[in-house]
Picture 1: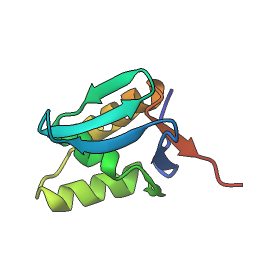
Picture 2: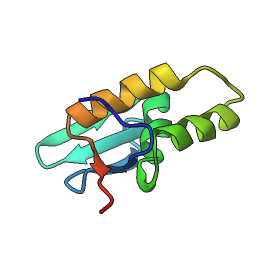
Picture 3: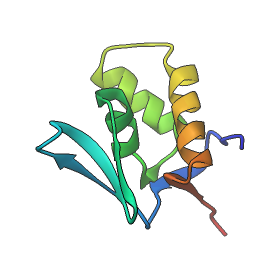
Length: 93
């Protein structure tokens, strides 16, 4: 599935992302288990709050980490998250 740059993104309502002290990392919790996230994935997914799209997520991360040219990597991660059902696109009517 191809991600549209202007479509708002949010974490799936069936999942919850939280800091897990035992693993010392952010995780995604779902009914059957848990997915451990690395720091980069957590930073990206934290911005999937229904208020940000690909473009704004990239902008925020580039400012936060004083980086540039990260759009392809962020897009790849978000498309993977979308295909895995971790996030969903919000369709405006």
